[in-house]
Image (cartoon, rainbow, N blue to C red; front, top):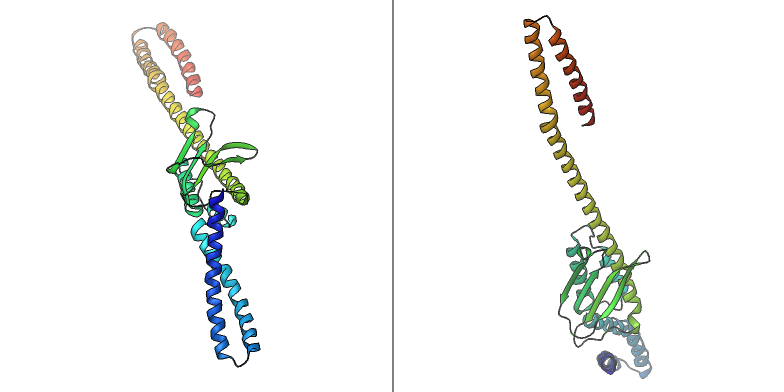
Length: 260
């Protein structure tokens, strides 16, 4: 707990020293160029006012180089919103981790998405885990969808109470992304089930046509040929019986066609 405070204090002292040196040099130059000490005092005050935003800008730049965008949650959330949830689930999660590692100066990041079964679980990680990491629950619609584990690079300040807003915003946005990824995954599965069901129905109809209706129609055609031969041979009584059978068979085949 002491090391982050010492590093932060040394950083602020370094920035203040640099700004002070610049101020003294500029004030000395103005004093040499002025005729009276009053003018030098006024000029020094103006220079101090001008250097104040410069000092703040330098401090922000140095903090961003060392700690990333931890002081600017809006930037991190804005980058997360640009991610495409329609890509493959693992690719979307890995891209999320890479973005967080780059923006927050992380040495390790992992994400796990819960599922109803073992096959539904998705995990992705980057970096090497050392020691304890900060865990964020990914909640969307009142449901915990997974967990996000973040670990700051060695030598940099770990997440503290001042980063609560950042972690909450990141957890909320990543939770929404995980929800979208899960919905897209379920949509893909539903589409695959529909395609499989359609193909199975096609195979069943093809089988019924080939093994059922086709032979029956062939038998019907052969029976009609037999009737024609019988009409030429006898008085027609046997042909009438056979025609009755063929009529019943035809009605059955019509019912089969309607079923198909």
